[in-house]
Length: 439
Image (cartoon, rainbow, N blue to C red; front, side, top):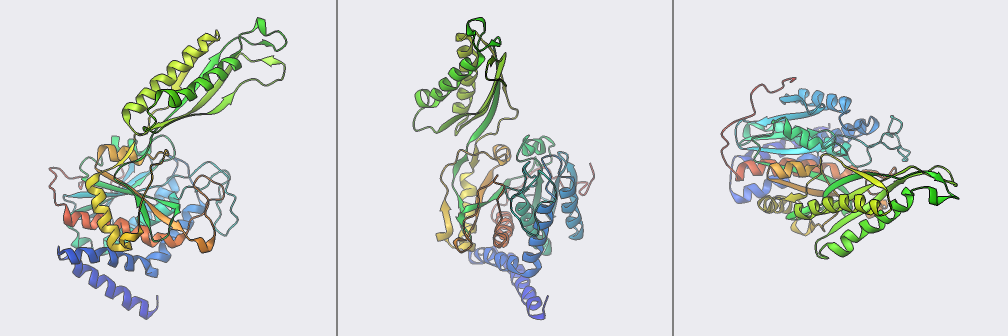
């Protein structure tokens, strides 16, 4: 780092610490801007880019994030940040601050997807059939960046910031398994983000209340009696039964749901038969269902099972239905935390860069956290039209605009720091004991 950059970093840090010592509203507002200035310094920004690229080259699937978790622990050790490991197999939970209430958490998911990367670049995935195609590598880098900034002035924090590095967001409900360990029992609030290729860089998008839908998956095996396709009268055709089932399932939304209550039922899998002239013994179908209320979600689940079993019986077939476990709840943002987010993000980015996010039928396992703890989930912009359009998540051509990393790190740090300053609510017990334990 050059002398000019070094002096600038010292100045920013000095001003920032001075700001933290005051609860004056104007001083509080300055915290957000100071964090962004600090995150843009090469000491933080270039380091985050390097971390993100290492993780991108070595993607790991849910509950297999052993090397990613090791990297996180190594960096936390370098920063002298205490942590607990393992939490839900590969998860890591770090602690910065007093070790006393209030406790506020900031979360990043760690897992990759089972797909081959199609982007040719210097840091392409080195693992065949695995890729960070949803930005989780960036999420980890930004949370570590926030940790680096927070640890620099840990003695000025008015409580404890909890760093949640979560496994298995893409499958198996890693957030739920972390909650089941009890390590987050005393958390007063939790914040999470997701990079977005559709939100402009320097902007964020969110809303109060429901943000993402509750989500479930189902598989059904419809069994009949196989035979020669030329003699259907001697068979019980499961393909015909499955076809009727699929058509009937579409009517659950179009004819049973309130048009103002958004719901989705999609059959996306159909497997049956392997020859042109043979009626198979069975057919397997599968799909997903979504809703924005628990009541509507459970009603859909009940009716899906009824339609599949009863419509199959009309065609003289039997059906068994299996639903995934766990179901993902609705991701709903706490209204008080929404106000907090608007204040913090507005001070950092300008109120004109806070976008109202439309409801989306996608799902996020951050919903488990937000169901158990007052939570807030938002989208961090990556779009830069001068660089062309970015692909949506889960595409083999997905890329991350690394210019977004300082914004995410600064928002993490600012949301947590100002929460501790503005929401002093005592908690009776503390998770500070035995930190850095290998449980």
